[in-house]
Image 1 (cartoon, rainbow over the protein chains, first blue to last red):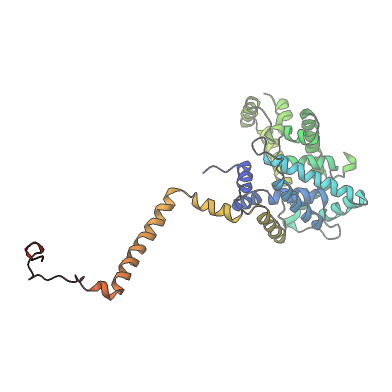
Image 2 (cartoon, chains in turn blue, yellow; image 1 turned 180 degrees about the vertical axis):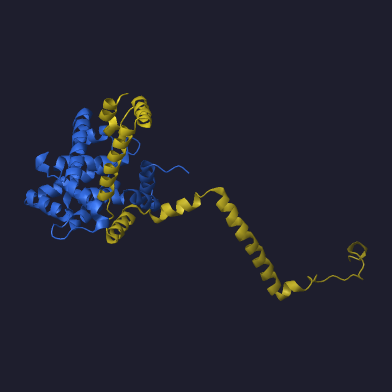
Length: 184
Length: 140
């Protein structure tokens, strides 16, 4: 049986079919929450942003499911919410620092051998400059196309392509060499 | 396609951003060139690792709160729910009739059995079988 597209689920939910929400939620909970969490760091803030984003997107009638995909809309709203949250913080730098500290493996205690690879990947992601991390997350978690990311960020598609190439190479360099973002 | 061209397209290939024809060319090259195939597998593994590490489920409480909000916002009003019930497809009505009709028949029969008057044969008042027909009776 073919999977029901997100856009049809949104229409069904707006028509009062609550089961459509459960299916949408199952599709996006880990991706959207992971994205928000990687941007804002703190779990309490991420919880609120996740809930607000989901509700806002579903309630907002300006989104027309017949005219565009649901995922880019969802991640665009999430990205804006994260940016607003970051701006509202007194010190952006301290927020970033806390986020990185939370996501970086503890230096004192070496990570569990089973978690070693995941911790290494997380450290490499955390060490990336924020713009590059955003791009990789939007591509990987949001599953957005170059065109959709370009539309979301208001730049040319070619620009996104070259930036994403650079971000991917930087991430892989960090992963293999364990360097810091300053070296990039 | 040579290895250099393949290498330049590998990230786009992994991100599924190549047009069908260049994509086929890369696929063909990867099938023939072990070095490029290994390079692609490493890239794929790194990207999959990034994806896995970034996935994270929200706490269950967040889901419950969100579900409650969605229910409040999108639960249809009582008259819409009633309308939806009426608009159900025909097979639903057939099932309903199959359930209700035997029950109705049983009720009718059961109520008939309970009434003692209906158990005996009906009586006709003022009828005398031995009396001559009205036409042969003297009127005056």
